[in-house]
Length: 97
Image (tube, rainbow, N blue to C red; front, side, top):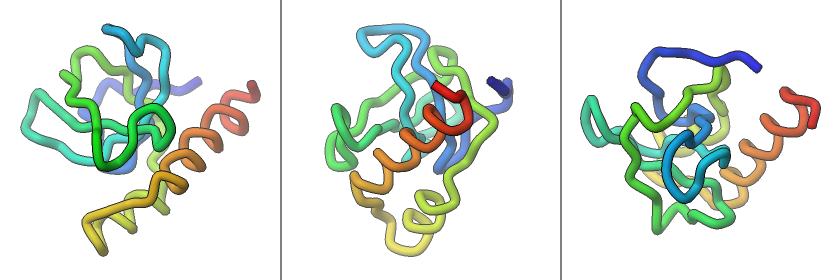
């Protein structure tokens, strides 16, 4: 598993380290400022109701979903199916779980 210490970008897969969702993988869908981002996984956290997280409570994975990134940059939205697919692809293919 490759981890990055740089601030997460749009479409980047992150793992939650603190709070109720500890251990959950999600996708960054919006950067609020240098400290906070909005994350969603398309399953428990939908695009319409993302979770606001402090980036200090996240571990950035070295993977950015091109489908999520392009969808958000083109339309400002992404489907929950694309979020689920991005998380599933990372967890099951990259981590070989």
